[in-house]
Length: 122
Image (cartoon, rainbow, N blue to C red; front, side, top):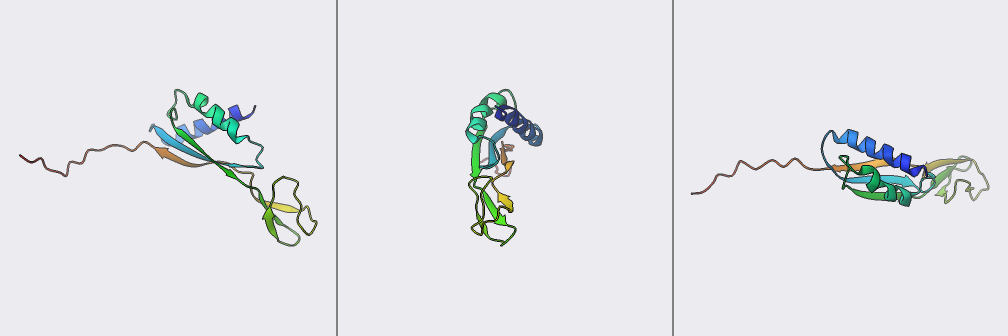
């Protein structure tokens, strides 16, 4: 299961970008044609994040459908598999979406600073 290694790398990248702040939420884009099992990432995330700045963060997964453009006729269409062909018969397809694996967003714990602009009333 290579998803364990992938998840370890994701947690390391997120922790590095957090720069010492606690991570509350991580949003990942995972293409359906990427070869990565999104549910395996979800399963590994809590275990891998344990003891890091990412520990306890909510994981949101966005699964991205495959899309392609025919290099012959320029038609754009869904590509549910890597071996999809165009309606014109061409298999010369440019991948537009579906192979992603990226950290889309990180939500960090806000620094809570008291509001000192309010004066106390006697």
